[in-house]
Image (cartoon, rainbow, N blue to C red; front, top):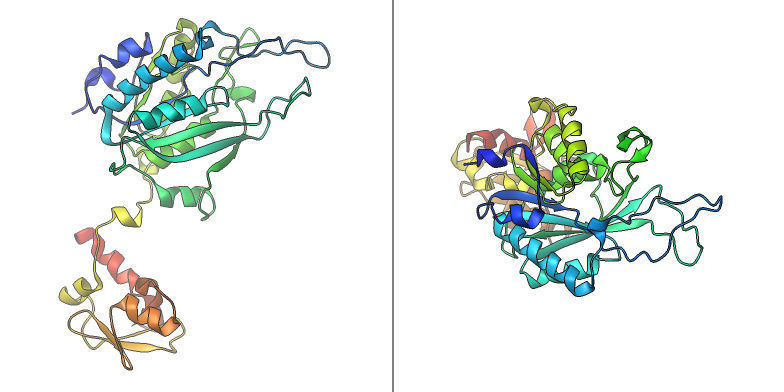
Length: 357
């Protein structure tokens, strides 16, 4: 049961204080963009002598590394407490803080699943010419613990990437243009994240109607994308100006129609159906011949769900692997059955059966 006080709501308050008020195991997913504790010692000047608008806000400044580590430990401890047992968390940072954050994440018992490099297509140049251009930020994705059955919409991400697996390096632009919030020509927030980044994160690791938390909401990107994608959001932001901007932004956000929000289920999340079940339920009968795709190989189905080809017998997978001389083979896609004038993979029979199981 969802606490109505946490449903599609953002609040103006101190993150740690507000996190302590939330019941245990509330959220399915947490995205955190905490202060980076940037150690910027000098003003940044462009070649034309104009000043670079860098991150020098008070909320990003800490007395020492120890102070920052204590702050990080405190908010991450609360996040672990309020994360569901099968939930996961994303934390983004730069070289200034992400290694310290990662160490604390492991110390607290989270289980790191991936570190993802957000490679910025259009990074700010290095005007001093004294080091490499900082062109990326690092995200750590972790489950609550090593036994968590976390959400990962693998098939949906493959579709997002033209049927190729998405790697842990993401090439996405920084937030600019019409998406960048501005007030009187100035940036509302110095580190506003692009919606494309949160779209990928929420699509990858949450489902429709999941409860998503952002404890450092900033300009509201997480809540905006969550609203669009049919997730239930809750955000906390300490700075009043950012909170007001996020509120205004949320009011202007349109929800994607519910019928377009479904994600493709992973095979491992679907009910497991052994080939023998198709025989038991009469979907395919003993004695039926099945073939390879070119109909050069044929085997017969036995009453126990095994198949027989020449002197080989066993499961659809074992016999197919032996024919190919391979260690393993997916029999569901290797074997085909006759349907009218065409051959169809036996996997189609399994898919037809799934809705009834």
